Length: 114
Image 1 (cartoon, rainbow, N blue to C red):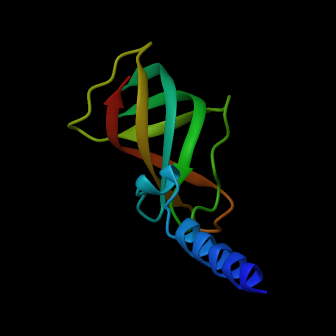
Image 2 (image 1 turned 180 degrees about the vertical axis):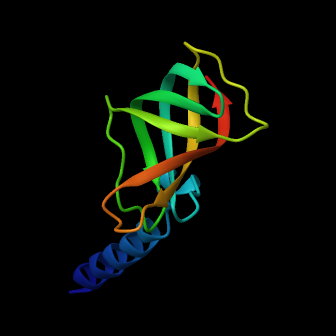
């Protein structure tokens, strides 16, 4: 009987201790309305570029149209971001919904070169 109580206490303590461990994937904080992708720049023209998405790393809350791996998508780039054709980048995209929310346009707000 004593061993059953000891086993029960051990199980409860182990389950509580395991519940406190945060998975490694929780360390990336993505703001609402943003998507983080890894891709390569296929074209650059003025303040627009075309990205070929290789991987969707994650997305924040409220994303309506999530890009998919393999998709080529035009993105608007801000003045301070300089891109060249053929570069591999990790991009933070901000989703801008159109009037009926069936289509989205994306703005490249931050870039890390890979």
